[in-house]
Length: 69
Image (cartoon, rainbow, N blue to C red; front, side, top):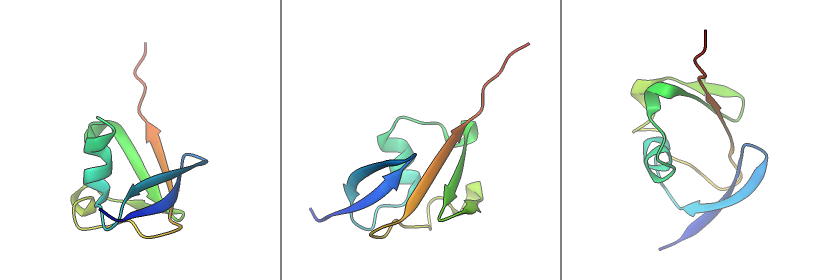
């Protein structure tokens, strides 16, 4: 299994090459409805998470929704 290096929330991280963003979220046990995903300063819409794949050097930011009251 080939790996690539991305920057995930400011930390260099090795991930499986050609992994989709949805696959990354599943690997991290994150619900796609509870995070906003940004890749290289572009927000990726939820319907595009499965078709968007990670490439070497991508910068990924995951922003979690926090509820409160």
